[in-house]
Length: 212
Image (cartoon, rainbow, N blue to C red; front, side):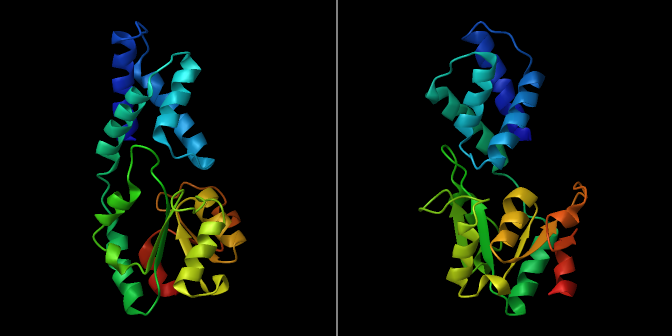
């Protein structure tokens, strides 16, 4: 969210200075948040396209160079995310139990570098397979292809794999359709009727120690 706030502030200043167009940054935050959620859910991860869609709504033409500059500002903040403590504890536990681990994620799009970002994750070497949807001919989540590809590369049938994700639309529902056991991680208890989206609901990754 902080990344979107910074882009909104930069965009408001740009529109005022270059386009002689006055708009409150808080309104841009609302628009960018809504549009980012809409486009993300549809598998559009190219941030410049997010910003362009916002500009289209307010009727302003912005050059690609500017959109990419805003994207750099976005990732300068969004790339600072630290792993959750429960992940740092649970990954070694699962690995020690002999489970094969795979990471399935989506591309950052133009101006981003998902491979570089996840390479800084402290326990990235715990994963046997890492797939980035939207790159290397892999369709992004929620397409089921990437889940089936992960199972194949792990050498395990889908029926013997479990998918743990925090997004019903992109993670648990398509994984379930692909034949995997699906577990919805709802850390903030924000989903209504979560049992509709997954086989199991967990609120902390350490719960896996009792489930698996």
